[in-house]
Image (cartoon, rainbow, N blue to C red):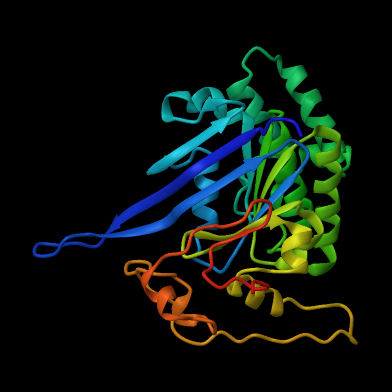
Length: 320
């Protein structure tokens, strides 16, 4: 396998919150530690409940926020604030709400040409327009859409426009933050097929942020499962779906709908309280909700164990 386009080692992001005249501020570890490699032409999915740190990770990868700890590299070059201006064009993001990410006062052509006007000042106006029209065709829109406004499009068409804008600078990494969750189910498959086609044509590396495992199963090559800012399971999509090793992953998969009406599965309903991010337990953060919890789980924090398929659990599924 070729060298990764992007590598993260021990990536973390902490926030100080609260505090007052007689109290110290608390620390929220939105992302405690995450390691991953992104490869050209492959998709890495990050899944988990709301508040697990998925979007915070996306903001660090896209250089919106600086990591509190850890290292991030892009083609071997360190992703640090001093290098952000030269690296940002290589990492682009597609947001969840396409309408909220498009300027309602600008025509689509202007929206698409703006990244080139800012980052490629050497290009002429004619070259920028030609590139924008080429991208409109590439994402499945018609030439007359160039002069229309965002409110004149459907949700699926707006997301195509958002994808086109993200690709205008020929990025190497595309961060997809819940790219289809705001769309009708009938439109989701069309957008996902478009993303797969663009990845094959342009050799893009995708970081796919989602809570929908049924979508992740069909688009991702590898998965990171996060819980309270920590990666609790990593591996190939095939391995994780076939034999989840962490109890949290198993519970998530049990809640995923299946198209087969004859297929039977055990629905795992989690009980107990979700720990506060300001007071994460000293042991396993999933211990208060885990049906396999033992004394060691409450005292010692497990680390990711395994090579191709790893889980942070003292008693992983399938172990003797």
